[in-house]
Image (cartoon, rainbow, N blue to C red; front, top):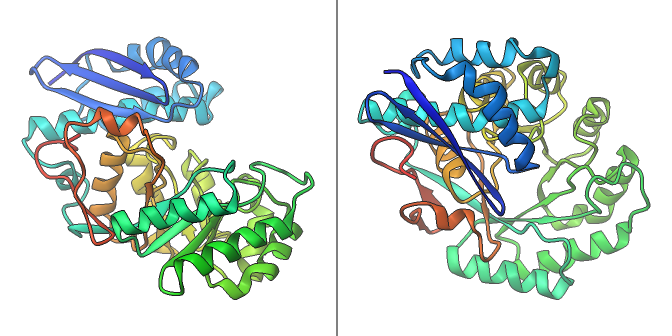
Length: 346
């Protein structure tokens, strides 16, 4: 089987990739849509020439041809662009073999995955946030939810820790003691701001604190992970095995979240999960989509023992990505079923 063509599909909030083969089998993947117009140029001008004529089963060699040959421009943009192509190659392989994708990634370790309802808004009042979460819990019976705190990538800018704490308090009182509550700073705080915020909210039983400090500041994460009595979650921005290694081996987190549509694809994500196993922490593949990338990450979670935590499920309305899949994902009692059928079944 040889790759004969590669096509990108771009719409508001998504970037999908299709690879065609000489066997009549096509595979589909998804890249993070951040600056999609640049990613498309990278895919078409840098990656496509390296994969046309290649065998999708030679995925290690393809990755080397793309990522190592172009190491002078390595970084998250190249990794995110390659992610969509790599996922599409996995999809084509699985379809060619008439197997669900999880069988190529290690087999079905679990059939269902627990979800948390993820609210990604920062522009709502506390009342609106509470109502949104309650609607999600009622609709999906989530056992956990996550909210945003901070200003997003604040890096020391003034923050209103009292307002952040008030939001956490209001949400905890609304959802009750039995639903787990997670918070996501998106790089909002300095180390000391993160410590101060946790001191204000520690009574509200926080299940994990995601990306409190700038995502690249490993020193801050090592201190946080050894200071705060709450699991620290990081990794969604990371894109190579050496960064994976440094955060995990140095004890900078308790939950690691390399994202298959950002980090270079499923093979790279599997490497992150292996490091997690070696150092006794959980791997939680980050993904906020509801489409092709989401399906691929579900297969990854289904086949990976280290994925022993809740999986993110966006509760944002009017989700375009969710309209681009052939069928709805089966969600029942706060758990999602792994898609069946050939490929990732998107």
